[in-house]
Amino acid sequence: MDNVCVEKIVVKNCRNKDVFINVADKGSSDVLIVVHGFDSNKSGSSVRFLMDNLPFSIVSFDLPMHGESDEELLLSNCIDDLSVVDSYVRNRFNGSSISLFGSSFGSYVILNYLKVNSSLIYKNIFLKSSAVKMDKVFSSVLIEEDMNSFKDRGYTIKNRNKKMVIPYAFYEELCSNQISFSDFRDREIYLFHGVKDDTALFDDLGDFNYPNIHIKKLSADHTFDNSIFSSVVGEIHKVLK
Image (cartoon, rainbow, N blue to C red; front, side):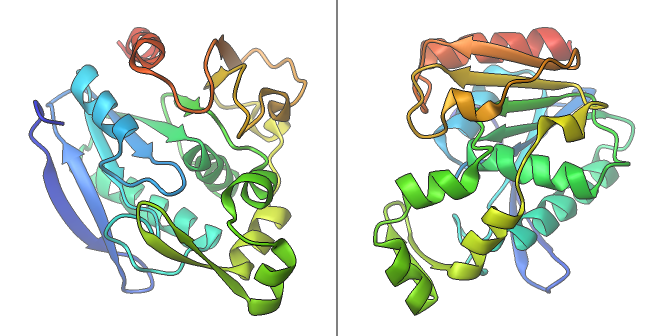
């Protein structure tokens, strides 16, 4: 984002908590709402790459317990905050075409958001390294202690980019909100996934054949390098232009 003017916005959600938003307003007719991955934030590397390399207006925000947010991390809170950001974008960029981009956990949030907001219209949905089986990703990769200890205590603590206190109720939400792409037959969805991804496995996307869901297999792991991500940006640009 070194070359892009980013405006910082704060709005309130339905729980009267702050939602922290970055806006790169490029005056385009297309707007991309970006939902970052687990333990990242609204200014993470994927968001910066998109802002620097796409000519479209881009809006990102901090999910609960990420970045500047200290609100409890629950899937329901994530979905609500995406709804708040969506409303902000529709009011600010009235008349523009809106698309969504999700990375890893952000993809999972978007898909669950679409399930409960089936009437909302988006031009396209772009999902990178989608953690569609987020309960498995959390229990096998993300948690830093034994799952039984996590359950008994009622929360776990994760320390990397930020100290995160994660309630067991978050994991229960992941288990009870499974993703099936059969729920999205009316959505235009583009999946970009590395065949060497050992965090969110390619096979976890499922075996399906829907003409509106486009899968791009990439020679990458969970985190794309700049050359791989450049090809993704090229595809997004081609689809949206």
